Length: 489
Image 1 (tube, rainbow, N blue to C red):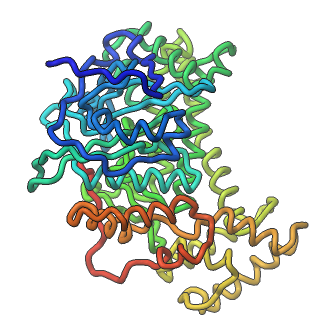
Image 2 (image 1 turned 180 degrees about the horizontal axis):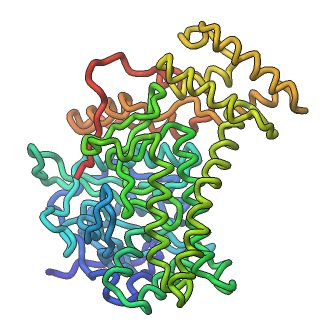
Image 3 (image 1 turned 90 degrees about the horizontal axis):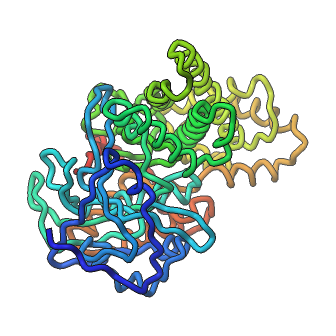
């Protein structure tokens, strides 16, 4: 392979600490150059947060395409494994290359990864490329998640490659630049646990602690502490997904991060009508990753993570297993606590009472029975606007509403304070699936990015409750064809 040219004297400040780990963890590989790169979108606010010069970046389309390398980069493809729909398999970055970590002037460190940048040793039968639609979709949804206040990887840029990619038909190729706290996954630990040594496992765990949880490094048992922190972050993350009606779609262990960020926006989507069994992914035929199952799958994945740590937790494997089990079983309680607290604030409740869970579940049961729009019900309650929705005309809702008002009356905070709390906690809009598809169609088929830009603008502050957001709150027209999503490979 011809060595790529390096870009010098820019605001990039890249290191690659992961490339200092043993060779088993990754393979050095350079992006495959493309013929005619064109910048589609640049995330200026994210660039500034990364301590990068936006003006310089606008001229660096060759970097975002993988044709040139930023100074300090050491491009690698990371190795990992994963339980995919419950089945364990060897994986790895099959179409993504980690350039390194951007280190800001204040010492924060962020992975910079090119997604769709060509074949790697882990590509298996894939071509290592990505198409424009799925890359723009990841950009839109990841930025929407950031606006919602949900931990997530983010998207710095998307470029068209000027080359076609063959899927079922010829599609426009693209490369997305993804930013993450790290790309350490549960599957990374599964890979080293399966094919590495105990010493390599310790190196990986110590690296994860240094990167994400340095406060536990000198504790009595840092590996139990690592497990505790990952469990805590995942409980909080999945609760936040449930609170906004987000369905990830493919919660394999290689798609669960150690950092607690949402990653890999393939067949994800947001729920319109409240239905606990909602599934969007075309490949999830049995509903393994349905909305209702996400917390349980999270716990299952964390049990797989705990298994990898057993040799580090205690030399006595029986004791190690018991210690790990003691932590994993706490996930459900942590999740329930985070979810219940989140639901309280969605209803303007500041304190706790024993009957709160029943009050919340009664509302959700009514929403499901009357096929109510999840986001818009809470939006209407936050605005105290009880007109126009089928649920609000039902006598059982009137009875529930009376109970809710009595509940609010038993706290010290005023009704105005409760409504403000609700507006701060319930998004005025979400990235509606039909709006996302509308934006992608205009961009991919017509080369019109203005629809996407307008959508991104209103999604950047979903709690604004502005008049500009009104039209984006409308659910899709009824259809006999269920909405389906695809992995986008």
